[in-house]
Length: 428
Image (tube, rainbow, N blue to C red; front, side):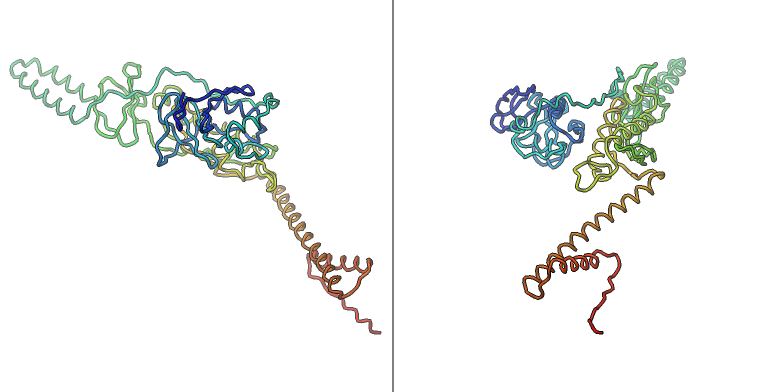
């Protein structure tokens, strides 16, 4: 394996139970997601890792790098401010120098320095945390022998012209042998059954005597085997991007608080054979899997978190939640030939039975924060007043008088109502 950046042969490093391919010149590393998870088990993470292999590639101006294993162009994936190269065929990810600490820094409880990749592994990986692993999500195992293949087809206009040509020849021969009229008409009518018209973003899944023969794609006029039948009874399979909205669900968050959550999933069919033959109804299937993924993800986060606490929450970390939702749904619907384009939370609120109590709690927290700010400011103003009076020798106060002055100023500054001054003139 050669470095896709420097073209030098990669070195193999074995440390802390890890086997890593790295470039001695540029300090970049080549890792599989399984190895990334193994490294994550040695770190103190605040949330589960995002699988970069499941994220959608982006378009960049620079030329794609070649995979060091298979030699195919790698895709660019944007995550948390860094561009990472991934090879979907080899299931490998290429981290340039320093990108490994940036990637894990997003998931670690304690902030880490931006250091070179090998230094990060040596400094932060702790083998004693390896036993504290979370159960990994298992991909659905639905086996199918079918994979989408293109169906045999001919341009419909060419096929129609040929049929008319041979039909005309057959009619001329029928003048010589009249018995040929019947078979010619039967063959012509039989061939007419092979014409199909497809609109843009439509496909037909075809079978012949129950055996899958291919999928017809492409808008236009087609001619196929007249014995072919559409599995969906001439109703084409839509390849358009579709929107799924399952409405609101009541789910308990990480703290056990009931909340109402709704998501919108944008998806499309990419493998018609899997969608038709692997599951009974792919639309019902993705709806059920979306509900299941939503419950799994919501239970991992609290609804809200204090501003000073570095804890991800459903309300404050929408980008992270959306990425995990998309990855979780995609993991389970791949067996149905479905690609998840996007998944976002469309509704998020406390359940009605606790909404009033949570609102009072938020109001109380806001009042406490405001009182803290008022008291801190009042103490500073009192301190400043006493220092100015003392420094300018305006008046000399003993400890008792200072205590009275402090009490009066704090009452005046911290009161919710406007103070009413009392003037004493010592007149009898």
